[in-house]
Image (cartoon, rainbow, N blue to C red; front, side, top):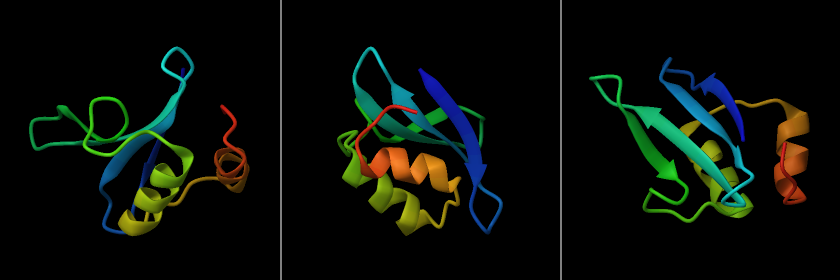
Length: 78
């Protein structure tokens, strides 16, 4: 599993990555208690596809490295 931390312009932190066992991308935020909230992925309301991850990253204004974007676009693990 890959797991990276990024934030949006308002400073909210997010974790994103690829779960090799589940063969799915994920995006998580943290609530006020520091608990993980799944936004994209198997435990979230949105399926962990590459398209859904990219949509949510864009919607929330989360910046990630270009090489991660390239791998997500081509539906590759990173």
